[in-house]
Structure formats: C-alpha cells, structure tokens
Length: 485
Length: 96
Ligand SMILES: [Zn+2]
Image (tube, rainbow over all chains, first blue to last red; front, side, top):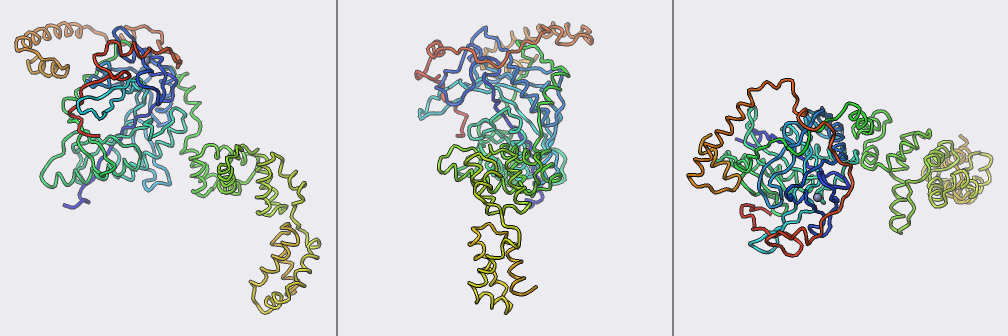
C-alpha cells in the first residue's frame, strides 16, 4: 500500500495560560521567572485544610474564549478532581472539569486565505483547570527538582473533535486559533514562554474506514512549525509501523526538534484511569443570562469578521488586510483614518508602507516618537491633499515626516514650506521654456520619435521648481510645446 | 467488588496491600457500595445537585494575597536544595 491509501485523523488540545494577577484557586501572584517556590501558599502547596476558591476573572476569561469559539455555555458548570500521582502535582489530583465544562459544541472556521478555506473545525469543549508545577531534570541522575510557582495557574483547555486530516490544516487551524485568542485579551498567547501549548492527538486509518485508529499524543511542541513537522513524522511512523505488521501503542510521545523525531514518554494504560469525581470543595458555578450578555458584549470584532470587512467590504488587497489583522495598533489607525473620510484603499499603503518605514527608521535611531499616534484626521487630510493635486506623492512623504516630527497639521507644513504643487500651466511656462532651451538634443530626439528623451526635460523642470511641479502636467505641457499636439 | 478491582485501585494509590488486606477491603467496599445503592433508590428527580450546596457564589476577585516565606514552604520537606523540592528521578520519563 502507498501513503495515499491512508488518511491521518487528528484532534488538537491547546492549553492557554490566562493573564490573571492571581492563581486559579488562591491569591498567589501569577508571574513568569520569579525565584523558585516564592509564589506559593497553603492552597497551592496542598497543605491539609486549605480550601480552593475560584478566581472570578479566570471564569469570565474562560467563558469569553468559549463564546469566541462559538460554543454553547453550560449555565451550571462544575469543577472535578482528576486523580494521578506526579511530583509536580502536590494534591495528588488536578482540579479540572469533566462533564460540565464551561463551553461545548463550538467551531472555528479556517480563513479564506487558507488552502483549507471554509473547513469548520469542531470544538468539543472549552474548560478551565489549574496548571501543575515545574519538574526540572537537573544534571543529578537520581534526583529531579520541583518548583511550584506555576502550580495553580489558571489554564483554559480547548479541545477539537478529530476533524483535522493534514499537517498544513493543523498549522492553519493553530494560526487562526492563536489570532482569535489574541484578540480576546485573556492571555499573552506566547508559545515560547509556554503560555500557549499545543498537543495533537494523531492516528491513521485506511482511506474509507470509519472507525478511528489508535492515537498517540505529541508533547514538547513550542511552535506551530514544530506541530506541523511532528505530525508529519508521526503519521509516517504510524503508517510504516502498521504496514510492517506492527500496531500503534496508545502513548504520549515527545518531539525532538533536533532529530526531527518523536520518542515514547510514559505508557498511558493505567495512568489514564483518572477516576474523575466532582470537586466537593467548590460549589457549582452558575452563570446568569445577564452575565453571559455582558461577556458577549465585550467580545469585540473577531478576526474573521475583521478579515471579511477588510477584504470584502473595503476591497483591500490581502497583504494589507493581513498586516492589519496581526497588528491591532495599525488596524486602529487605519479604521480611524477611514472614519475621517479617507479612501480605504488609498490609506492602506500609506500605513503599511510609509508609516511602517518611518516606524523602523525611528526605532533604529531610538527615537521615542510613536508614529501610529499620528492624528487620523491629519493622515486623512494628507491623502486629500494628494488626491486634489496639491501635493505630489514625493512631497506628501516629506510632509508626513514633518507632521510626525512636529505634530503640526499637513496644511500648516505645506504653507510654511511653500510646498503646494504648481498645477496651473501658466505658472509652469517659464520653467518649461527654460528646459527646452537648455536641452536642444533631447528636443530633437523627441521630434524624431524617441519618447523616452522627455525624461531629461521633465527632470529639468522638476529641478527648477524644486519638485513642486505636477509631473503629469509638465509632461503634457512639454509635448504640446515640442510636438504641437 | 472483585479482588482485582481492589488491586487496581491500590496500585493507582501506590499502596501495597497484603492478600488478607485485599480480601478484607473487598468485603468492606462491597458493604459501602451497598449503602450507596440504598441512597440511589431515593427519587431525587426534583432536587438539583446545587440545592445541596450553598447558593451564594463563592468566588474571589482576581487579587493577589500574601505568599508563604520560602523557609515555611520547605519546612516539612524531607529533601530540598535550599530553594526547591528534591524528588526521586522519574524513571519512566524517557523523553527530554
Ligand atoms: Zn497559592
């Protein structure tokens, strides 16, 4: 059999660390990089008698994530204990959610810019749980060390149905999910810091088969590219294993980016008997319709809605739309400038091109100016001056730099520097005549049919007018004089 | 409750039980489950689970509270390196 006789079946679990001040069930600060075991208290240390009290903001964040992913919300949700022994889990169980998660039955649609546009990846559940501590394997071959600062940090887990079939599709799903989550303001979504962790469940089956194959779960993936590579490797490994007469073992495997392979971690069989039962120390969490409405009203525009508005309603090219989708500050300036009456397609290249260049230049010389703080009305006015012929594009760039440096209005700068374009033929006559007189060869060439020779004459006029002449008008006037047309 | 069930639960709880203990626990578990079966027979269709717990929302605002001094954190710990807990190496964790 060849690889094309097989199909991959993949579901993805994503853990998202929430940006709260304090932990999920106690008041310890949530902070990255603090000295070991300094952010702990009796609750997250699991000292006898300590009781967990859920963080209201973490719950609002979890519901916000669930709503953004189109989930239904359990109006009465519940925490459960997931029991297992590991040194990074002081209580011997993790407080998680089993059959009453905050969100269920959602979906995320892959964007029009994806090769899998329109695929709806179903979201099985969105639940809230606490993170474990950190187990560090130092040089000592017999001992590991434990830092419990991270223990009890709120995590949202987002689980898909096994709807994904291709490594690139998984990659596109994760990118769209990351974008969607980053709009919610509930997490810094930083993969390298481990704020967002992705674990695909990978299995294969013969094309046309309906039952699922045995799956493996891959961990230690700190970029979307690693997820894609690990999935490709795992699919090939499983197909080869089955074709050579073996069978896939249900297990957790770790990705090694250096070797480009996965390796077995711990076998799951008995570890997977988590004996979930309701957390008796926490009352069920009820959410009223009014509370849901309040969270819904704070959601703001989703990336999908914004993408549709930019591409379809405003007709932006996808490279401009894409920059705005990933740069909220630029998008805000763009929207505000359009709201000032500027033409969307004309504004976009100024922000993506010229302002970005100004931003880079200022960053290089450590200038503190925030170029995106330019008044949207000023930017709109600058574009209007270009549109009505007052400024050439080149002079408009000069005005833009001056506006950013001084904070003055474009009109004021045009007036101060006497930059308005010469757009009347009469005013240009002296400069046109001087150019013709100074370049007899070029004039001959033009009469002989060499159209390119006009460049020298246009250049002459632009120099004598210090760049203020309207180039189109100069061109037209020169032709009229020389060719009489 | 079979003896094998008790063995499985004991192994998940990291408990070594003698054959006599396994037999005794099997009987005791069966007695306890019998009591729950009696409770299960009660008709509770109209009683929601929440009705048995406090109705008020026992949540906390997202505010930072004092943490424990490191000395107290490590006080009852059998092995530490002055800032961290030391534990036996996890042998079946072949990765990383
Ligand atoms: Zn704590």
